[in-house]
Image: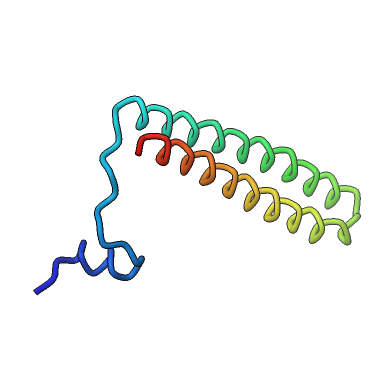
Length: 93
């Protein structure tokens, strides 16, 4: 009987376990995560403020555009974050 780990590895097409990360790599990954969380929070605050102003001024037609922009920017920042973390992971192998 296969373990849950083995089944998950098969699902992702990997046969060998991921290499262990060093403490420095873990710290760098945490720093990258914190950096991108801060960037995302900054964009959310900025765009949420714009949404609130648009609503207060009766410019309701701008709200969907702003929310779409927020979703797009959040997705982009998340992709950048994952790419940066993947570079750190690969540097250790």
